[in-house]
Image 1 (cartoon, rainbow over the protein chains, first blue to last red):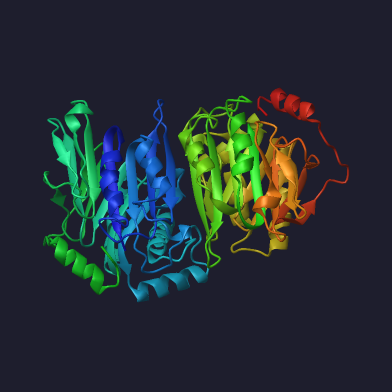
Image 2: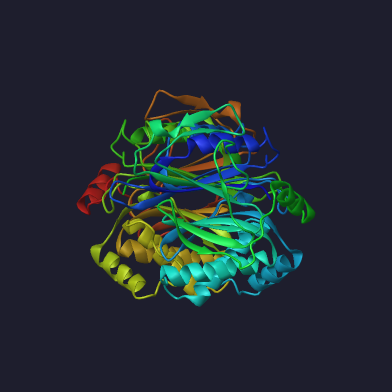
Length: 294
Length: 294
């Protein structure tokens, strides 16, 4: 279901411009009107990362909570946002992404676009009902939160303590591949330091850095010249289901590609040997065919 | 450290009036200006409970996030709010109560007022460093989140699956008593259905029900006649460190008393055989003597 927006940067950055376009798709320029959520990982002056989340079950284009997010400049290192078109699980706060769980003393945020298969849902629900969800269990009733809990339970069952980034990233890629083999699975995951992007169908990114230029939203009349609001050292990567601007070049993730960003840079990439890219129309058609929505 | 505000009701209720007074203590009428947080457990039309949280590291009396909370009427079944005066752990989002963890597919929110002893902190940090925090570990560096993780790790180690309410409430009382023996420990805990209140020193509550009357805030010029905004069936319990109104009768919890509320009613109570009540002045003096603040 729905659409994803992510940001990963090397300096605290206000996502206001991207969010201003993205939220229009929640009921104004598109039909993802069953609530929204946004998670900000912020770094305080001493370098400590904290998380704050905003959720609403109102459509994002007119939600007062989304208004606050737009008007209260929150400078974050990592952001994950999601607008929802309900498919599995009714419209309720408990079903609103991003979902958050604490892992080894870190907050992990997760948002999903797609649809897990019925057999995955039944199998995983049975595992949890039989007491095999020692660590994490879903609160709401979406296939997405179920997939997140599945992934985290596998993670904790495999590693007693935090492994190296190398081992962790390889493990997460393998788990995303498994989930993608059991449904339509695009996701963003962040622990506040890095952000993982996995494309089951459609996912694009863009890294803005010096020399900065002008950007113009596809979903509104807004434009910004990033030269006026940045320094030469800034590096800001924006991730999104469907590009937000039409005068910049967005890079597409291949189907089943996993890319991890840190400080705005790609720090890990795992690409299938045979690269496939869907057009936006193909991605939307694929989502519709499995009962999801893009 | 700091001050607690809770609400438990039998019908979705807007905490706006109480919060309007409470937030003034975060920098205007009192000095708890190191951020605030509020967690709302809301029930959707199908009876499903969802949680949303608002946190800010700005003082609550002037925070734009607190403004939103005041102006956007959120009707909740359970609320836990906290204003912070930093003692252990700097002012940062990661140190802002309420802390939330998922337990058996439920969101549990926790806020603490007090100060754990150095020996409890050292002992528990060592347990966690040695891999004995299989389930929960703190994200920030407050003694409060450490105490919450301690309690939840004990809970999961003791019960593989959710026990009966009777067994659960007895267990939680015993854990709160242990924590109270290892520091100054006032807390509120809610899973969205019930709300637990434990008084280590100061905690008051008030149940508003028919016939409703007028209430007047101690921290501002505001008053409300609840007759105008309620039905005869409504039952709303408000919990707070220091009473919010001066024309109503607040009930005080005895030191080391544990009371659990559901639908606005007391459903469980465990009172020490020898009841002690501190005056507000004694409670403030006790908090100061252990380096906490009220």
